[in-house]
Image 1: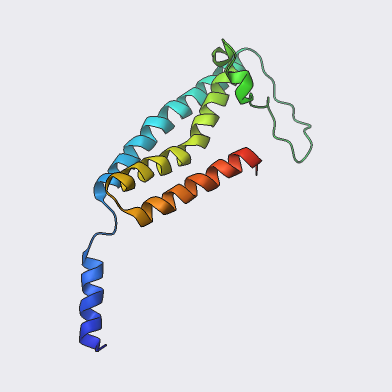
Image 2 (image 1 turned 30 degrees about the horizontal axis):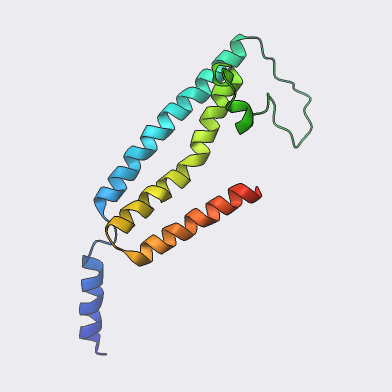
Amino acid sequence: MSNLALDELIAARTAQPRQDPQIALMVRRLTRMVAVPAMTAMFGGLIATLLIGFAPRLGNPAGELPGPSALSLTDLAQPGATLSGRGAMSVGIVALAALPAIIVLFILVDQLRARRWTEAAVAAGVIGVLALSAVVGH
C-alpha cells in the first residue's frame, strides 16, 4: 500500500465520527437525572442524621470508616426505611452504584436499535460482567 493510499485511508477513518453525539448527550442527561437526586438524598440524609444527634466516633480502627453503616437492600425494602437519615443516604449510594449499569444498558439498547451488533455485544458483555460482580460480590 502506498503512502498516499494510507494517508487517504487514515483521513477517511478519522473524518467519520466514531460516536454519535446524541448518545453522549443522552448519557449526560441520564447521569444528571440520577446523580443530582442521589447526591441530594445523600446530603439530606447526612443532615438528618446529624440533626438527630449522631456523633462520629473518633477512635475507629484503621480499616473502618466513621459513621453508621449503610442499610442493606432488604432493609431498604421495608416500609419507612427511606424516611430515616441512614435510609436516605443508602438510597443515594445505591443510585450512584447503579449508574454505570444504567448507562451501559442505555447504550446497549441504542446499539441494538441501530443494529450495530459488535458494539451491542460489547455492551452486553459489560452488563454481564457487572451482573456477575454484583452477584459474586467482588
